[in-house]
Length: 351
Image (tube, rainbow, N blue to C red; front, side):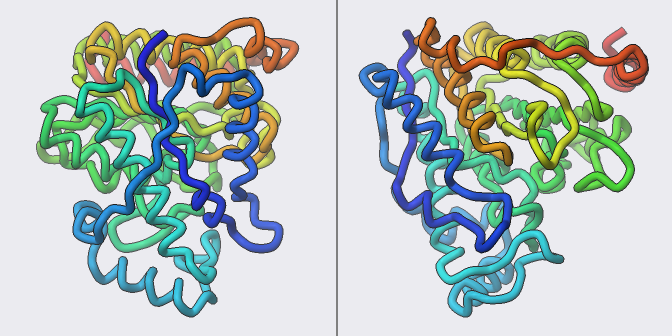
């Protein structure tokens, strides 16, 4: 077992978009219930976050944008972006407590009381300096990376959400202290439209953005091939002192918004590899954040299995949460994945 903290506030439930919007906190409540039913919190410590100050938020967001969110939050109408992220009364406070949870996840790692920390209420990787995007108001991923730079010279973000981590990349594009790896579906007209192999950062951060665009239909075999051929050697070369894992559940084959085909078995393999890399290079320091996931049952099972693996309590009770099968990519999809791997090896000098 590893010393693991689970950051939680019942105020997370307030981050719920109205009507038939796909982002609901049911995913988080289902995950917590699964863990409770298996007595996970006998081994994992529940910790309440403290609300961070606006000054901390300004490390990645402009004051003008923060004030804009506050105004929309008070009025409770309109949108924070072009139409994906509707405002509702209290959205500022609802977003802030979730970001605060990720800051708490970092702080418990820094005080050396815990090897790992988990905030499934976090993972808002689309938010940018001056705008919301893709259901994300404030970017906790980039924020804790910037805060972490005060203590570590090498931080790695591994983002396995089904959508490209465009906001995180944009906020940290010129930052050489943060390696930004994103595996995501890439297809014409698929949100957010970025994340191709040639996006590698700029300035001092050139080469520190690694984008692994995957075609629709990518199953466990193709996903793990890309992970083993690109992510593992890049992490081993970089040797991060802290790893931040964004474990969005929307790469699952049953997700309604993404057409990747990961099963719970594939997710477990990826999370196990990231966990092992954290112990090999980062003295065990690993933060897991949530992210997307719009099939709530699949996402809750993915997160519960991942948390059990990270905490060292994965056993037969968690095995029962698995999908009944692993998934395979078609020959056509595998050829596209191999072509992408070859391009990335040349771009990032892995040959």
